[in-house]
Length: 276
Image (cartoon, rainbow, N blue to C red; front, top):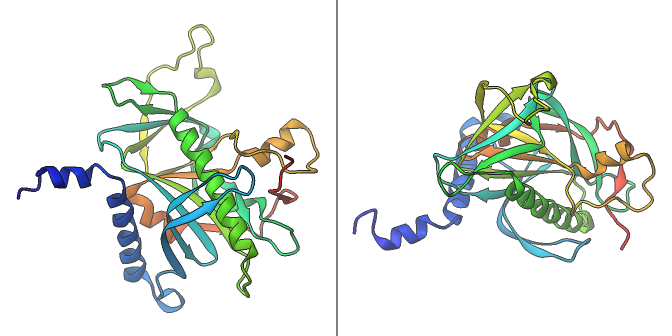
């Protein structure tokens, strides 16, 4: 049989090969670079992890969950055509942000809490994306990514709630959701004065390829916690979880190098429980 036989094509059309390759890449990188205290590549690794969202009751499976140094990385794999680009619009002041909103199991809280944490290394932050369409150069407006991000947030809540209930003597973990894609990620930095109010366009500019982006956008699945008070600007923080979007080729670097300082809380943590 040739590599292009119909059975191989059927397998290559699935997404689980990317999931398996991702796990092996992270494992190999962790073992190759691990020394001393980090000679063990990671604390745990699971694939096809079931979850149930305590808010909506929705259920599903996480592609891959790996824990390292007190942080759970929750991976959702999205295989696309390699020539496709995801274009993120990034304001220049947000090109290297070193903080984000993450879910954390904190002591003395009744459920997992959203906190504003220090994140290193810094990364570009965006809430707008144009995704290459399946038909020629026709772009999509990013609703697909928003949908996937919303689904991942539900999975995150379900997994974190289950982990919260598990008896353990370990330090409370943080949870980092990551959408992995085989597409290229490019950012367009802009200043407000570049935007045209006359026709809603930008002038030609430079698009820079990046390994990952922090996607932050209010998600409809992420409802306000019970008893949360404040103006709309303050409440918006609790509806903007940080979702990492990373290229498949860079995920091992993200996994090995990301540091989440959940001890650096800038906002009062709130429960993820919501009113029905």
